[in-house]
Image (cartoon, rainbow, N blue to C red; front, side, top):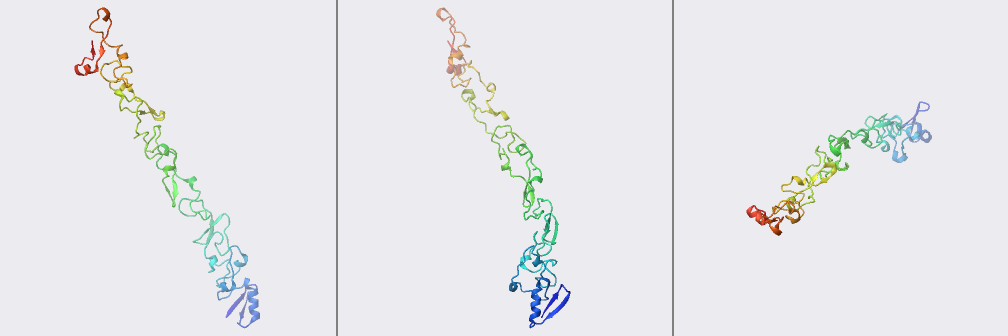
Length: 283
């Protein structure tokens, strides 16, 4: 037997199964009524949409409490709490509120935080938190002013590959700490110097930081001369020529014979003699 509660007049009617008129009245007043037996939703084909005023006044689970005040009736279309249907079926939260889906209450929206929680109730967690990102632990070199990033609800180190100028291993002579290890231009492979002949063989350039690569200080090389003056069988000025006679003639000693046409003549360089006897110049 089905008991129909006439909420408008606060009276109760008991309808027999064969009392057609009573059941017609129950159907007409269904928007204000409830049965002690659950309604057959499939048979009645009722659909509960959020903010539907008719839906809000019905009692889908037949417990004597209408949907708008019932803590989530059994209707599958209202089974999950959301901003659009929170404290009761079809009751939406205000724009400045979000639904606490655990408590079933509309609460003020929180500022989004990096914690894996949808703090502002917009359906997405941890969005737009970059403005609150803390500085990364490593602030050396090109990593200065870099910030942590929010991953899976926690702040983690930044993606160094996205930092402009970052290199896992330094490769440029530029006066910049590109690998953020507090050391500038370390571990570089210097290119060969411009002069690689004679006493300059195997020399490499030196790094001057922001000025880039520069030639070595040739004057510091053993045996280097800006212009050849020694008869020693070496390319002292690193030009690819050993003991140039034109240069050596300016410093060569006078020949032992200075008579007649030989007056003013000078000795010539014999590198082999120099190597064997220690007397580079011969008459």
